[in-house]
Image 1 (cartoon, one colour):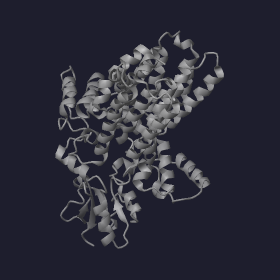
Image 2 (image 1 turned 90 degrees about the vertical axis):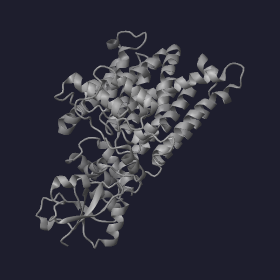
Image 3 (image 1 turned 120 degrees about the vertical axis):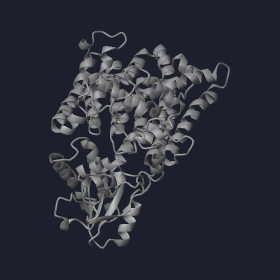
Image 4 (image 1 turned 180 degrees about the horizontal axis):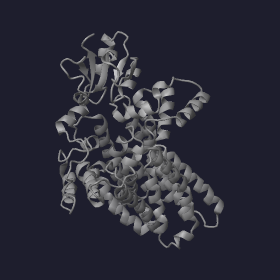
Length: 551
């Protein structure tokens, strides 16, 4: 055991460390699943569920029927031609009787919560004597507002991050725990790595970037021989090959994927567009605020301490922290989304955990009761994170530790605070980062509007459902544009169907739900002599129920 671990006196018993980690994981899962079915569903939820053809699926059935139906679905045409495994799990959750919000987000909540367990497993494999670091890192991943929030949405990046962490554990065994002459073990590990990558790819395609980033370690390993002559390098390359082939097939299959994710730039030029990406990430979305102040303060301390005591692990973490974001920013057009950087955020939390262990040694000091005193510090840190996440997910916008930036990813200059202002203003003084010539993508609504929406985010659709239950007389409700109402109406026992309004006006439905801000663009529902009038809107005043004025 190294001097650092001996100083802070972490739990020596592996079973005790495992019990503590399990408790942290369970608390993290509680944060992810609490009230998961009460919160609003955005437009992407409807897109996913329509593509998964959940409306056509019956509840229940036998596993044989499920397999037959899923194979038929996979071979058929889909409106959302990627994240296939995510859609398959949505189909299964629906069959098992889950509500629409849980059907859309349940597997992400589960796998996002298990990211904390994957973090503990990786550090237990890579540094089995650093139990304190593993426990603290588990808590950081379990309680961080960033990881909890992105485990409660429909997007699959957090689930993919869980499989990526497991992949890193296998890759560490390939690079650092397997003799070059042990070809059988190399083969088994390579197959396991390939399988983990493919499963993670089924939740989000960006995993191909981080697979390449992890392999960069082969070329910067301390005391390495020529990397291309090492069996570990070729094991990594072969394990990533199926993922590359699958990603290539996805690019060829989906024009949308090519345009939005695999394009390098637009008409602005390569470097101008890179400047806009950095401006969007740090000045608008304020990624540093979403990740949090503590990881950024503690990670440099942890990096220095780890580099002194375990250089190989330090280099491995730093490579996976830096290379993935560099590839995204330099090589992809759609790299302004903060959730694409979740794997690197987790690496930052690992280094922060090591930094906290270093501070524990300073707090304990010689000649003091080391364990109780030392563990007060990480307990306070994790307790604060739990409180901040609780207020951010379930509290009010006026709560002291409510993290506005998590919910309003683009709201420049509003309630950014000292930490946000310091980093953003420093970045904006750098050459080329003064701001894009055209407005960046994002939600620029004022904070008062955002706070109102957050207060009303629970049971958003309730006014529409209650009105239809009282007044509808058996008609099928039409849905235009955002398809999310199809699913919450189905949960409420109200039949609904897409109605694109391409038929003659006489065939338009009696009731229609659509996005209010899209109505003026149609030129149909707002006309004084038009057939529809607004009846009631949801709590956010975004979707509205319209009724035929002539019936």
